Structure formats: structure tokens, C-alpha cells
Length: 137
Picture 1 (cartoon, rainbow, N blue to C red):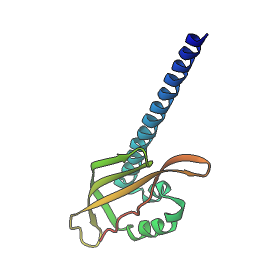
Picture 2: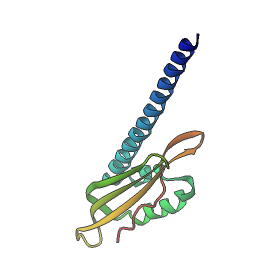
Picture 3: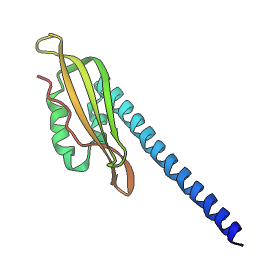
């Protein structure tokens, strides 16, 4: 009986470890998907849709940045690197954006350090941008 109980406990522990590992992979996979979707929206100058990735607390300020960027066009958008902090449910991405403004047509490059967090908003856990859209000057 003890041997069977030990075996059941071992199987249960293996199952729990597998669930935790799959959850962590899913969380990281969701981050990769979120950052790629956000990047594509910024690249295509669909900034109103990109604003859906921000937290509720930053939404109004993010929309103000979107409005200020209406005369900006992205030429290239590169994710240079990411840091992933699984235990905190946070991530950071360093992005280089080549762009020009319609007023100058001069190509500029900026580095945007994006902060992301895995948050529960609206009853659903998802990756949210906790930093603002950069200022395009």
C-alpha cells in the first residue's frame, strides 16, 4: 500500500511539474505573440490599435502620444533584444525605430525600451505594455 501511495504521489508531482512548465512556456509564448503583434501595428502606423496593448492606467496618456505621432511614418522597426523575467511576470524589449516626420522628411532613429507585464485586467491575464509610445520628434 505504501509503495502504491508513493507511486501515486510521484505521478501527481510529475503532472504538477508538467503543468507549471507548460504554463511558463505559454506565458512566454504569449509575450512573444503580443510583442510581435504590437510591433506590426506600430510598423504599419496603426497606432490606435497598438494602444489596445497598454494598461488601463496609461491608456489616456498613450492616446495623447498617438495623436502627437499622427505626422510620423515608420520606415523600419527592429526588436534588438528582449529580457524576460518569468518569476515577476515582466519583460522588457529594446526596439530601434527608424522614422521620419511629414514636416521634415529627415530619417531619424530612436531606441524605445518597452516595459511589459503579465496582468489581470478585465478578468483575463494577458501581456500589457506598461510604458508609453515614444515621442517622435
